[in-house]
Image (tube, rainbow, N blue to C red; front, side, top):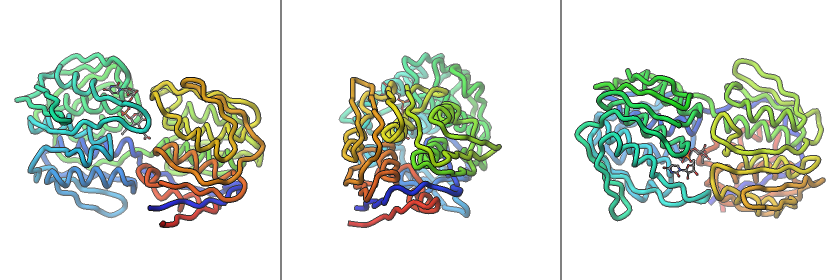
Length: 419
Ligand code: EPU
């Protein structure tokens, strides 16, 4: 196991490069299953979730070749089975994203149910009802989703609730269905648009991704393509908060400022000076402490739930009192108890955390519980006095590419230690 040891109190400064988006590359890797030839995917981040997806595809017989400069060639034509075992799915819920493509391309799939996870129950009922509306026969037996169909048929699907991977699964499935599908109340996340762009680069006909009504004209076949994954907006936001929380000045490169409106607005409210270019964002805190901000998470373009924990850390040392309300997941406050170990003053009332900023946090031993919780503990450690030890950091490696190297490049004293 690994842990991170952080000596806090250094204002971060310099430049940091953002990697490809985790939540775009995972559906794109799954979407490669739809193709009738090899696909090249570029700007692939170095993440454990990417390795897990590659293992999953590899077990199915898909050929994967690592190329230069963070590219992967995926050749789905060597596939031998359409099975996603519990052992893999339980470690990464996004494995459910193979269900739609397998069914659409091969007419069958057997995928383990993901089960609960640290941030909530996270059912996949809308994935299944959408596929059933397209004509799939679905049985759930002994923890496995067993789905079959001759060919999926286009359908009009109204989602009960906005779901990102649900929208993506159905969009992938519909892209090889006969006829046209319409997904209403679709997720509008940039990663959904990236997946649609990828499918269209393979010859798909998806319209209006990025709105809440996506139209997908099914095609007979999708061909190989060469596609570059969009930058990670959550990684971007996390480094910006790292700068803000330490009173530093950091320029985040190779990102897309247009994807971060809600996050940038809150950083400005916190007192940060923000400058943006086409593919960079600079945050300057001018050595000041941030002001507290009120946050309410919501599907895109609202404030992202994946940035909620980081702003809890920011509020913990801010001037004043801020409230953070989580509306997307029912149990995404596991970081609160751990941040409190560093001296944060937080009251949890239902789905709202009321955070009174304290003068200082003090280093302590803390435990990462999920990906974004880990990020918030690292951020808190960067500003805490003395030494913070973050344990169970395998969570962070799932979604942040070389985080300690990137932070060290900004002047942080952070070290990975095996134990
Ligand atoms: N939901 C249902 N039924 C469904 C599907 C979803 O009730 O069939 C509920 C969920 O339980 C949740 C809400 O709908 O309460 C929204 O969940 P959603 O399906 O949108 O989440 P997801 O697709 O499983 C993706 C990201 C998450 C991110 C959420 C919300 C990927 C691989 N994962 O999850 O990313 O938090 O959207 O934006 O895209 C992360 O990166 O740390 C992460 C957790």
